[in-house]
Amino acid sequence: MRLLLAFLMAAWGIGLVMAVTWGVPRVEDGLRRQVQGVLREAGLVDVTVEVHERAVWLHGEAHGQPEAEWVKALAASVDGVRRVHAESLTVIEPRPPLFPPDGPPPTPEEVRDALNGLIQGEVDFQAGSAILQPDGEVCLDEVAQVLVEQAGVRLFVEGHTDNQGSGDDNLALSRRRAETVVKRLVAGGVEPERLHALGYGGSKPIADNDTEEGRAQNRRIAFRLRTVQGDP
Image (cartoon, rainbow, N blue to C red; front, top):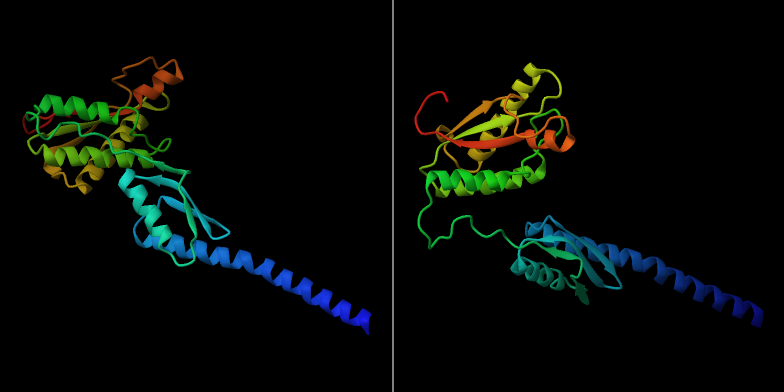
């Protein structure tokens, strides 16, 4: 009888431990889903969540310190969260304005030069296509914001390629890429009549096409001022 009682007690203890052990992942997963859901509802799609022993670890990006503090506060507000760790949260500080609001208004030439500097090395496309890479989309949204503020500036949007492949194909590709940029800027609030897409293929290189580095520089988008209506 004693042996049977001891066996039953041991089995009950093992079952209790196993139930608790199995229950912990379920609780933590539920808590993770709650925190992630709160962040998603707030539009914070660049942040992911881990949960261990009811402590929350935040990963990803926050755009500025105020947003980082907001993310931490939202995570801490979820019932059941004991601590919030944000050491792995990368804070991306916003880029300073190209033209200080309290400074003199820029000339169209200054706007053109600033925008060409802003997009240099940032506006890339998928290989052989006119589909923008995500970083290029973000950069062009900044360009659109500047152009909305500088309403008097009208631009040619030029597409250029390297010398690899067919000249006719490169010409068509460069035009499609320029048109993609125009569409993105228009979606950002720029009036379409202020922009005109042009494709030059590989006819205007700025670097040596015999090197990969040079070809990468030649595959580019560039802005040029439009001073009058009509063809360039």
